[in-house]
Structures are given as structure tokens and as C-alpha cells.
Image (cartoon, rainbow, N blue to C red):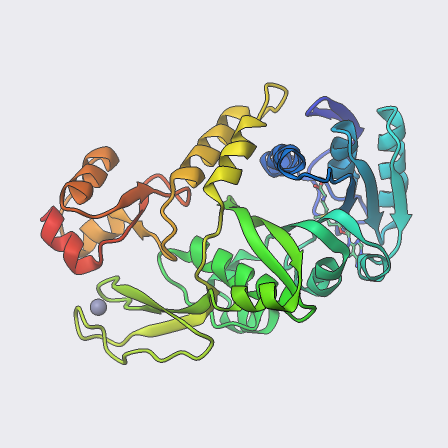
Amino acid sequence: MRIEEGNVEVAVPGEATDGKEGEVFYNPEMELNRDLTVATLRAYREREDAEPTTYLDATAASGIRGVRAAANGWTATTCDVDPEAVDLAAENFERNGLDGETVHEDANVFMHQQRFDVVDVDPFGTPMPFADAAARSAQGLLCVTATDTAPLCGAHFESGVRKYGAVPRNTEYHAEMGLRVLLSALVRTAATFDVAARPVFSHVTDHYARTYLDVEQGARAANALLEELGHVDHCQHCLYRDHEHGLLADPDELCPHCGHHLQTAGPLWLGDAHDPAFVAAVREQVTGEFETADRAQDLLSTVEGELSTPTHYDQHRLYKRWSKSAVGMDQFLATLRDAGHEASRSHYGGTTFKTTADVADMETALN
Ligand SMILES: C[S@@+](CC[C@H](N)C(=O)[O-])C[C@H]1O[C@@H](n2cnc3c(N)ncnc32)[C@H](O)[C@@H]1O
Ligand SMILES: [Zn+2]
């Protein structure tokens, strides 16, 4: 089957595949992820003084990302362990009259051998088996997808601990918990090579988390990022939460709001998951040929306006705890702001928001 995406035409398996039945993987639902990748590549190239040129699609399948990068002027390389995927990627470059190197190799071997301005890791499940090599290979920007949301958010606790070297907790802000567990693991992995990897744009959409990290060499820069790691203490009973910086957790045992036990998650990335100026620049690069343009614009606007608090709330959950009916989001956020708190929507869901108010402040302001 041939499909068109972002001005390229690529051959892909006839229907969505999971890559497990001897077919090359292809998932049409990842189009938003790929459109945002192209917009991010454009914004990144514009931002840099020394123009970055090389892009590696390390786990490429049909090569669709690499082909789209090449169509946007990048010197693209695709890599896959599956020989059929490598052949298909080569065919797809050729079909579009584009040059692109297609490598048949284990991505870990290849990334330890060669450096690229941008490295994109979009594997099955967790990206962590590729994180060491990717952190060494990427010289400017590291792009990472994780589709194992259950381990990341604490729903599969042991698996999350094993893969990410952090304690996840299953909270009502599970998507952000997952993202911050992932970012923590990526920042710590890069730091082992004296590399600072700082997220500039991240989103959690459908069944995956996606993040783009600026990469800078140097132990001092890497040390500075370690200071943005820490823990979140959470009360499952009243939804109170607090956070503390530092690699050692030192939580209160009981919730200061309702007296129930607190759960601690971490080390998590507590710093910004995005740079608003960069996200705005990405939004400007979303152009008409993207099938997902409207959705991408909406997502980017929300992410750009998101407060940088490490957790978000769900308005409906709060009102349920208070046994009251929820109100419209605009009115809800305005009430919080009128009471002197910062408040924003968040991209994690239509009724989710971020605020500098704690649960007690909110109860006072809203009830
Ligand atoms: C989720 S698919 C990639 C999808 C693709 N990036 C896209 O946007 O359509 C993951 C790919 O990683 C490949 N893969 C798995 N292990 C690998 C390894 N160690 N080195 C390189 N590729 C690998 C698989 O063969 C598969 O084609
Ligand atoms: Zn509580």
C-alpha cells in the first residue's frame, strides 16, 4: 500500500502492523508524532547558528521519518535490524527521488560508531535499551518515543522500576508521571557520559510519550541538570501532592492536608518539560501539508501555555472528591486566578490543569 504523508509518498504494509508477524512495522496513528517531528526539526534548524544537517532515524521500519526528514533538507540515515525494513526504507527514499543512507545494523552498534546532529529513537515499547548509545551519538537534539505507558506510570510497577531506575506511582496524573519518569531516566543516562540532555518539547498523546532534548557536552552542564531531579509526594485520598528536589527522598509520612499516608515517586524530572519559546517556534512550522495540522496546533498552543509545575490536576476528580458538580474549564481557571493563583490548561486532557495552588487553596477558592 502507498500512503502520502507530509508531501512524501511511501510504501508501507497494507494495514497497521505491530511488527511481530514478519511484516515491517507501520502505524498510521503515529502521524501526529511524525508531523510534530518534522515541525520540530525545522524549528531546531532555524534556532541553531551552525546549521545542523544530519538526522538518524535509528529504529526506522519503513523509513518514513527519515524520508520525511530528507524531504525537508536533512542528510538522513535510517537504521533497522530487520533486513526487510532496510529494503523498504531504501525503496521509499528512491520513490521520492531522495538520497538517504539505509543501514542494516543493530542501532546500538551503529550509534556507538557514528555521531549525528539529530538522533531519533522510535522503538517498540521502552527506548531505554537504546538510551546509552543514543546519548553518545546525538550531538544536538535527541528525539525519543516511549510506548510502554503502563510501566512508566506505575501501573506495571516492577517493570517501571527495572526499565527506568525510578519509583513510579499510579496517580491520576499518570501521563505526566510517565513522562517525568522517562525524562529522569534519559537525563541520568546522558549524564553518565557527561552529556546534559534538557527537554525542550514533550507531549503525551494516546498511548505514547514523546520528547525532544537539547544535548550539550560537559560534566558541569550535566551536573546542573541533576539538580532538577527529585521526588513527588502524593496523597491518594485527597489528591494533595508536593515535590522536593534532590536524589534522596525525605518525605513527610502523613498528608498535611488529610492525615492519610503519602506515597513517594522518583527520582523524577521536576524541571520544565518544554521551553515555551521553542514550542512556539515549532508551532510556526506546522504547515498545511500536515494532515494533523489542526490537532498539532492545538496541542502545541496548550503545551506552550502550560505552567511548569511537576504535576497536573483533573478538575473532575477534584470535584468528585468534594462531591460537587464540575464547572466549565474557563470559569474554573478564572476563579483560581481571581483568588491569586496561577493556573493553566494542560495537554494531558480536556479537564486537566496546572496551578500553583495546593488542594487546600483550591478548596477555599472554589467552594
Ligand atoms: C516502532 S517501529 C519504528 C516505527 C517508525 N519509526 C515509524 O515512525 O513508522 C520499531 C522498529 O525498530 C526496529 N528495531 C528493533 N530493535 C532494533 C535494534 N536493536 N536496532 C535497530 N532497529 C531495531 C524494528 O525492526 C522496527 O522496525
Ligand atoms: Zn491527603
